[in-house]
Amino acid sequence: MKKKSSIITITLIILLLAAVGALTYMYFAQKQEMVEMVEQMEFEKSELEDEYEDLAMQFDGYRTPDIHNDSLAQLLNKEQQRVRDLLEELRITKATNARRIAELKKELATVRSVMVSYVHQIDSLNQTNKRLTAENQQVREQYAVVQQQAEELQQQNTSLTEKVTRASMLEITAFTVTPLNRHDRKTTNLNQMQKIQFDFTIGKNVTSDRGIKRVYVRIVRPDGELITLPNPAQRMFEFENSEIEYSLTKEFEYGGEAITDVLYWNVGEILYKGTYNADFFIDGALIASYPFELKK
Image (cartoon, rainbow, N blue to C red; front, side):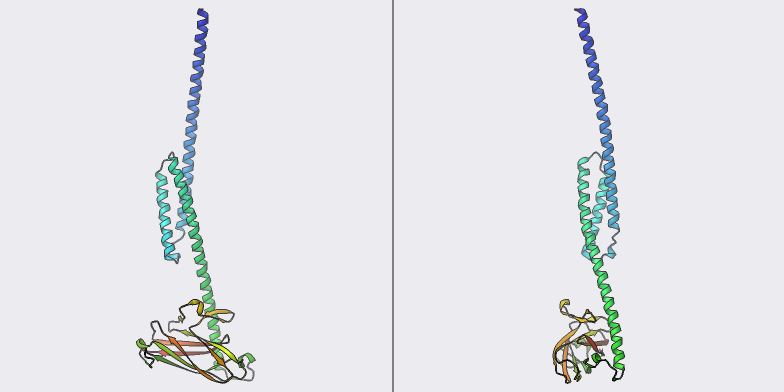
């Protein structure tokens, strides 16, 4: 009986030691697992910080003065500050705060998608500005060349060697400018000018096509700026395989004989003292260029 009791005791001790050993192993295993988990959290937090810093640098790469849109620049500045604030919060947040780290990760994805949208808008605006600048420069260069050619043609004597196209081109043979006040009376006071009357005569040309035609006039101010109509869609005409803006236009019927007509420019803006220039276009050609002066 005593021997049996000893066996039971030894068995219990062995089982107890086994249990203690198992618990000790589980403790150290869980502790190691926790250490590895914390290290992983620290690593993920560090990676998230790097991503925020990269995004902040991308935002900083877009300088406000380079963005020619005030509303977009303000939105970009707002998002830049938001990224800085989130990055600062991330730096002081403990890696073990899994919930907040996850929230900051979602915030990063949101801000990044917003930035992509802004970048597309900025690139689109920059491309549009470049295209418009290039088109404007091209039109100015083409117009300058054509204007010089027209001036040279006006200085040349008509000869039998002129081309048929030149022979059939209409010409302005007379041109006068009359400033009018609000009562449609002639005035020389720049501040009282409400309307400018342009009287012009299209010369006789038996070789030109008959029918309904349209004259376009481009008025250039003393500062070199073109006077245009309010609605961009209604102020373009074709010239030299491109479309350029005009200041005035009028339809007329031409039968080969000389005709006299009139155009009115309703000022609607502050007039500058100095020399203006009126260029006449008919049938897609620059046919005359006249300077005129407005004084106080």
